[in-house]
Image 1 (tube, rainbow, N blue to C red):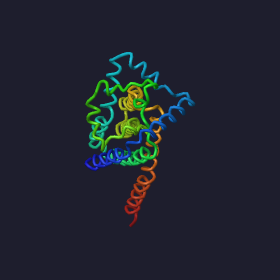
Image 2 (tube, helix red, strand yellow):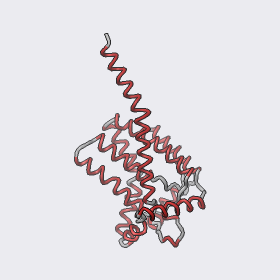
Image 3 (cartoon, rainbow, N blue to C red):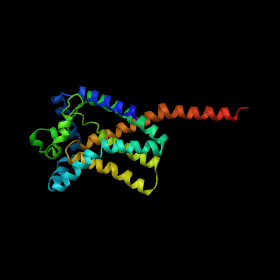
Image 4 (spheres, helix red, strand yellow):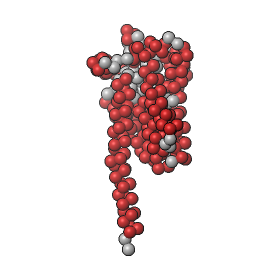
Length: 236
């Protein structure tokens, strides 16, 4: 567990060192928005306009965004560690691989979130309006990179929890929770103007790569170890 927290700290340090490239990040954000328009998935403005009609909705999605990410992920990891150590070990490796991939992309391709776009785009930073403490904590610049929108590991790690629920628990209750988790995450990152829709696609792609890398480099070794153990038992 301490290794995971140490790696997470290093990830945020590296991510923070890649900050400060506002013009490049804004230009990349415009490119992301243009691609979304071409694909017909540029729904951020409509989703947030609907959210802003109700203070209750704003508060709800702010809460999901704040508490449904790292606090929930840490709680889930602690639970899974005791519930299924094998699944925990596999997902921990996927988590670390995704951190490395995400940090590299943030450095190579900084993207501004909708909330940091110029005023003519019309996005409202709902967290700044309702949860000033969030940004006060985030003002520790060494750990903060406001241009780390693509990929959205906020969404990607919700898929990690989904995988943990499906493989480590099972049953219809876990299945329902596993489906609702990424849906709620997706809605919150868009409603709060913290991510573009394509950021979530990028987050899903990073997780797919991380799962594939874990299976390729660690699953194969586990399989070889298992085969060797079986050979040893069967030999005279």
